[in-house]
Image (cartoon, rainbow, N blue to C red; front, side, top):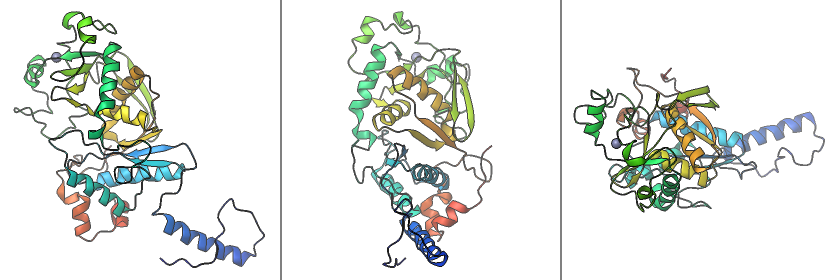
Length: 348
Ligand SMILES: [Zn+2]
């Protein structure tokens, strides 16, 4: 679009009297300017800080596009900042090429961010794989405050303790993709909870002297029976009961990777995020993260969960839905507008 050189009156500038027709012309120019500026991120005028946090384990699909677009719209509407954070902690599944593709797809959609791996910023680095020291410090804090216990259960142990393989797990222990393993992991049966004197909030001396989480799974002991209530900015009041809806969850796994839950709360706090916009598949994780925030002394951000796009069988989209990846849709000639305005089946 070509902008003419006539000075455009911006809202809030000194008011001068305008004839109706010149006012109309100014408004038209302003509208055009706004359109052309839609691809730019204006300087923040509020304290709102949102984030885009893709995990580079595959190509983004149309569901991601909707959620990230919502995150961008909310940051813009609030006059705030948007941060790009690459959640690349899983070395087996994360690929640089997917990280690049995710940022490229989101730029193509028209989404812009102020800080991120591609442009740095005051809270760099913006790749989680480069922030492990922060997660380690949080692990230590939780350990010393008595929230964690080491878990020696294997996946097989857990299945045996639960009587039968959990429905989200197949015989080989892999998720069959029907449910989100992140949010619907089996409730931990508590096998290691009672391990050698780990009373709640009272770590044994042997445990608090441990310097590194390596080699063991570390679980967060949830307050059994406590109802975690939060008001979702999109879906309304949500409530989950600790120990019933979710159990003691892993914050550090034995292959020395901090969990999604831990890394997410540490980064949201460190990066000053005031609102988390993400998919409704993470509602239960929000309850877990509220507990982590409390244990670490962080203030929880606001939460805005987006309803999920589902496929024609009513199943949530996953990165395996290649036909609905932004890459594939772009190759078929669809525009960002086509993708963002298309009527898609939603969950719930
Ligand atoms: Zn265990």
